[in-house]
Image: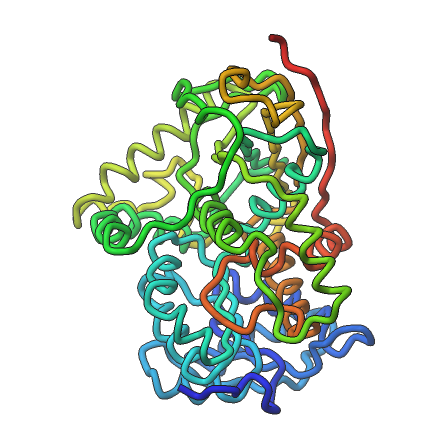
Length: 454
């Protein structure tokens, strides 16, 4: 392990690994917007992958209609650890777009930790994230390598959206629970990334390994939340406040949020930066003082009950077929059939990407006076609803978020923790990430504040 490498001069500010993949090419297109712009810390960029010819095609596509800039195209393969180590030693930051991450992610993390390089990825795979934390957190902290997964639609809108909702509860008011309701909308067809389906199928197939990993790890601190735990509720819910039907979504968001809240419970002022000044320390402490922990969950919504039944049917198919090899093969060979068109091997068309949007409502229930005794807190008496919304989640919102996280890391590194395997929320929460996202098409809005009937 190479301690102190982060402070050394590197050839590149950032390298995008897996740049020619489904999502990778959109990340390249987003990165080119900020390359060498006057206020951007991204001055040098390289693309990396197995095939230089495909990288060249990606660069031409991403820069169109302008001619492609003369970026270095570097050959690296996740099956060749030496190529990854050589690659990571040349850059300050590596953006990893090579999924599924449970199959291909660990060698990249290992190389970055070994070389003291910062690492961001776009995974939404909980087992991978928790495994990397278990294996590499202490090593990364010593090496000065920040390893931050879920820096895309999974799970930054959930984390920043929860913080935004939480900060609307002015003391002595405090939330008890915040439920996120995700709506995927389009004038055309909603089509997901095939790699997302592959990750979900592999997650079902290996759920036993994940449970074993969790049992082997020490329990994290739990935040103190006013009031009793919320009831489980019905499987299908009609959320009247937003006029949508909803069902629980087994996504990474709730798991990432819990990890962030555990870190915050262990470090109430957040994590100190490498070289913060007094104003930055005060800003960080003030930010976290306004964030009030709450029980958190995520549901997917539809305007119609039939739409929810469709989500449930596809979820059951993935849950059943993902438990045995032949079923996994069928799901991945014929995704359009078994997911009722929600996923295609070819992914969405450019028109489908451009027409898609998302809305994520955060419905917070809590107490107007959190100082009441537990006996008095029988039922929440206050509701605050906020919303995060933006463009298509996989190919537009995810690259926007990843690049803004990267620009913060490159431009504000001394204000961030020295290293470790951490969540995006605990690292980027006190920064200007929310403002940056708002400037790039992702909005944060207060919808309503209401007193609840007794």
